Image (cartoon, rainbow, N blue to C red):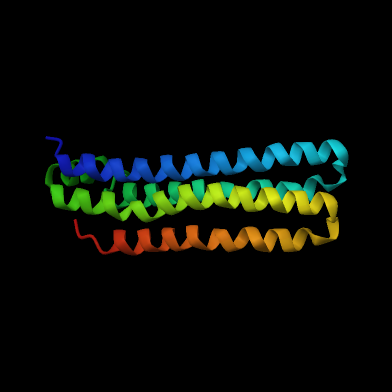
Length: 163
């Protein structure tokens, strides 16, 4: 019998992937648009732009990592164990997993969007002053830090849940 606890746990995993993925998509979109315009002026700096375009995509990866950790916790790799957990997981445990996924879901969504804005400005800086691309990258990494914190909190919270 499928318990509501399992539904909550899987919903948490899905939310982690979806929200951080949406943030990454929006962040990459804004940087890619500006990068395409900058490359139409001078395509020599494609490599420098590429790093700044890719940076907001890491939050989507972090959301995937969180979902993968939930799948491992629920032992979906072994169908026999997964069935046993699905039948025994309580609503409280499922909600705990759902809420444990929220730090990376929210931090991934928000930080990827804002990192896209910072990296967009970095691409504009690099287009005007190519020697300053390192500074643009550092500014983008500052925003990345908060997504990493969200992932770390999610990992700690997931590890604290007993099934």
